Image (cartoon, rainbow, N blue to C red):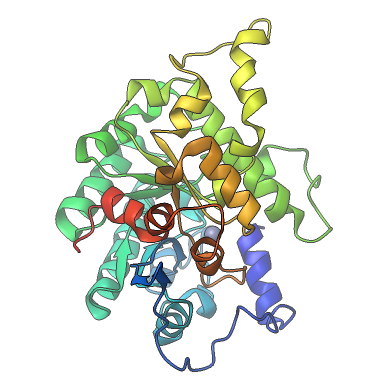
Length: 351
Ligand SMILES: [Zn+2]
């Protein structure tokens, strides 16, 4: 079971419906976000979406499933974007359940997903962009899928989980995919899928959704560490990775990652630079750590150019637009960059 599915079920059960930042009721209007008296464009890297047209494609296979209605994009999401002040949301389909599909099925699933996302972009002009959630278990296929999505459908990049059925996507087997990302000059949004294969079975059961609160940042931290230490970011020096949920524990635990290669006996490090250098260049993170102090720390370690706004809609979490816009710690230029400027440049979005 994934964290997001658990969250969604809790929400549908009404347990979280009373939160002040969560109201599907008709918004009074579109919120305009300003910084130092000037309107800023708010761009959201972290919008979930499911495509119901996939249901007949997987019917009768081991991956048969129903798409949750709350995850299907529609007018309610636009209303929530308006209420929060999100001008443009980047949609991705995840979690990545089709990583278990064979090649023929994976091809059909991703094609249907991408077609669905393309239809939404057309239906809500100027409000949406998309990343293709490719079939990473087949790296050459994933590269072809990404090329089609970017060149054929106008998508802005790829979205992947932190592992492929427990395997880190950092061995040479995955290089065709990373090479295509670099060739197309598009970023990869990494969203945790489920840390279940990283820890003892059941270790994160119980408590307040620890598979999400601990497991998701754990998966993200392992992913970023492997991308650095296994040398992927050196093999593809123009590759850009954006990690969900503030990059997991990685930026807040940077000192130990930084020391690992120098101090640990037998360390295997294929990185040419210290981890901190990649955080200032090839790695970006979203703002989903919620507190001003948490975001301030990300900016201190990475620079304001590496932090971008993320909402995680439709899942109920605190919003960080006002946290960033009202923060004492940042200059107006830093706020404008984090709320939308960084993503406009990264995703090459038209003005
Ligand atoms: Zn999410």
